[in-house]
Image 1 (cartoon, rainbow, N blue to C red):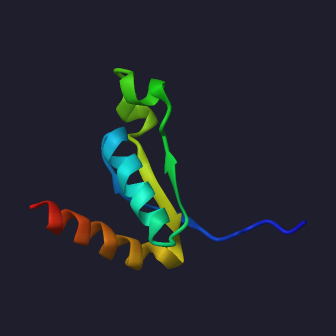
Image 2 (cartoon, one colour):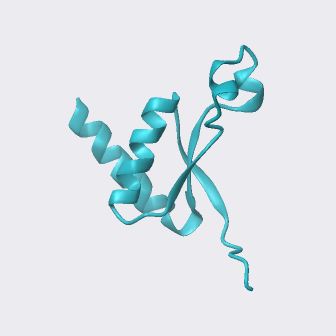
Length: 78
C-alpha cells in the first residue's frame, strides 16, 4: 500500500462555522480539502490559540486555485 506524501498547507483560518463553509465550497469545486483543529475543545477552550484556530487544509499544488476561490467568495459577500 502506497501512502500519499503530498504536503498539506493551510489556506484559510477563521471560526469553525466559516471554516466549514469554505471547506465545503472548495470540495464542491473539486479541490480536496479538510478541516484541522475542529474539535469543540479547540474552539471553546480559553487556550484555543495554543491548540490553534480551525483551518482549511489543501494540498500544496491546489493552494493557488483554492485561494482564488476563497477570494472570489469574499468579493461576492461584499
